[in-house]
Length: 357
Image 1 (cartoon, rainbow, N blue to C red):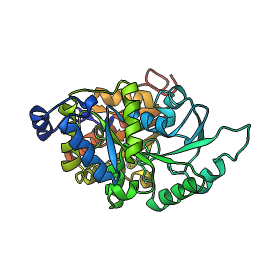
Image 2: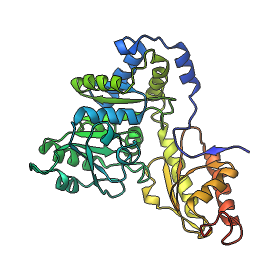
Image 3: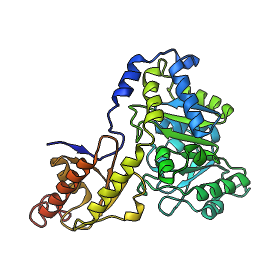
Image 4: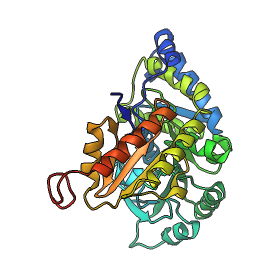
């Protein structure tokens, strides 16, 4: 039985071209800024993102937390969407590392309205922390891989800059947003002050992210990366795969988006499951389990037993993510297994595996 892994786009295997590039990579000591492959990756990423410079980081979380730390100082406040990755899934890094508090703003489908952000920018008052940064996530994971419309991002940045506040873009899946909108990634990143992009998600590289922005900002970020233990020495071995990711793996993201739409449409036809089709904009499908025999954890476990891997993100909510290692035939197979599992049920009502147990 083939296992179809839909837990995340982080589970992908390196392509043959990536493995070859890693094997052949020319390397040096990146802490001395002497690794030629890392340097090429950073120059390539900066160009694609329309920024002056870029920094290779170990992960999206490291890229975000380094990026936030450079923008902020102790006792400040960071505005972020209420279900954003930097707020929920980075181990309290904003508080622990930057020693700032977060002002969460509830968005619609993960998109903060510029007026709502403006309302939370602190006025000068001795009782208040200073608003030091606004973080935007594009695409937005918890909202279902939704895209921040470019006009909204432009307006939000205008509001922030009018108040003298920089904007950091958590663009872990920024290229998904670019492909979905049919615009270059550089256009999305144009109005922001810094941007982080993952290479190890939809682009398929085994490791890494890049943080990009003005040259002086990236120079300071390099210091923080060293402080965070991110001096990786001969990192060209993994940077080489990142170069392949950026040059060969962007356009094919459209295939993942199409597979996600097919997957979502199939899920919507299964009694006991509900999916909001309008939220399926890129490579993620979230659905709610409304069949009272199941909950999210038990359905996820049952699916794992039939070779469909997923994650439950709430008591009755499950996430499926398409990626380069899942093709259309896999989507069809996953839907057959999902329907059979839900229809069969977990066992006698109230028994082990049911929502009532």
